Amino acid sequence: MFYTLTNYFDVWGNAADGFTVNNSCIECDDLYIDDSATNKDIVSYLKKAGFLVTDDLRRVSVVDFGGYMEIQKKNGFPLFGLMPNN
Image (cartoon, rainbow, N blue to C red; front, top):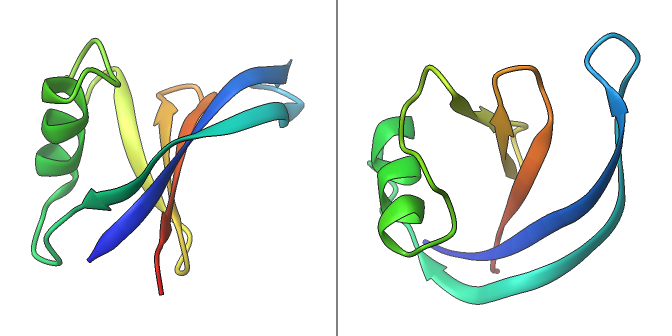
């Protein structure tokens, strides 16, 4: 499936009160991720593509919201959004 990768480059808030994405931009609108990809596969791919500096699942996580996914730091700080292209 193809996804649009959105970079959340301006995020406000904190782990206790929650985070708000104040500004973002589309980094890639034709990112292919296989439907069978695991969370590790996704973060490894994003690291190889230069979007992440780590693929360590102790530092970042993939959160599936049903219609889209977010790549977050472990404290919930959102880094990227992944929206399926229909």
